[in-house]
Amino acid sequence: MRLQTKLPKVGTTIFTVISQLAMQHRAVNLGQGFPDFEGPAALHEALFRHTREGKNQYAPMSGIAPLREAIAAKTAALYGRQVNADTEITVTSGATEALFAAIHAVVRAGDEVIVMDPCYDSYDPAIELAGGRAIHVPLRAPSFSIDWQAVRDAISPRTRMLMINSPHNPTGATLTRTDLDTLADMLRDTDILLLSDEVYEHIIFDGRRHESVLAHAELAERSFVISSFGKTYHITGWKVGYCIAPATLSAEFRKVHQYLTFCTFTAAQWALADYLLADPQHYHDLPQFYQVKRDYFQHALITSRLKLLPVEGAYFQLADFSAISNEDDLSFCRRLITEHGVAAIPVSAFYETPPFGQNLIRFCFAKNNATLDAAAERLCAI
Image (tube, rainbow, N blue to C red; front, top):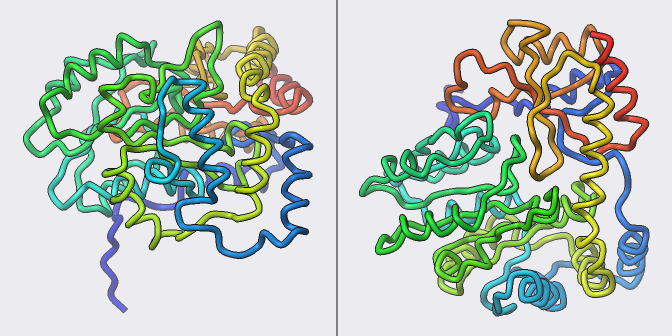
């Protein structure tokens, strides 16, 4: 059979490759971004309870009403925006599904979508499958801030959407209110839509405030805003996220969502609805919880030859390995696993065209201290 692939540039994701190699060599896995600790016990108990009570069949396509109402209440409390739970909130099977559905809802053949490099690896394939073209604008290292003039220069008559991500994966950079104001000025009087990936909204450090697009009235009116319960409650395997968008955009979003997954894990939705209302303190405490882990990991690596970059949010630490090796980052990551027993992700995997001479790898510090200690001991011995 002769088959022409629809994604000629795509192979197995780097996260799968690195995790499989880590398992093969029994390496400490700081590569793929998932915690090695459990979420809140009360949330797990709620899941078991709802499963036993028979909440095991299809949920409504847009998500159960109690969860959408809880999300609306949280959005109003945190960001001051009143959203309609019936027409503006859609529960999804993880943030990746929400990103895919948002892109396919509005991007057509020949449209352009501006993304910031480095960016999460699902963006490009989703754009390409929709018939669009990703226009990559590099972030400014070492701060990985957005060069807004470069973004302005990238806009063309074919620009349909612009994508932002804060706190940012893989760099941990965050956007300020000034950034959002600049973006609003840029998009005003255009038909360009905004997709804001805010899955790490509650993981932000050093007293910073998460500047959500939902708190910016002008931007919110043209935006899909994507969030993730997996990141907030340490339950990445449950694959539950959501999208908030104005009713007109949500209607188009749901047209795709209903044929992509139709609905999301029913009992988990009920459990999350219970827990969102019962314990909002969990997400208020999350910045400090992960800041302690960030600082612990950074201190554990103080005697290593790695140069650690600043981390403003999310649960990833970038490290420059140029004092150790001049090989490319993928080769270094493979050798880090096979020779030193630690798994990391090469940052070049997040780029369309990696910057020449940039020797960066990404560690995930959403791990127990024993895991971080084991990794740090091996890294400091290099």
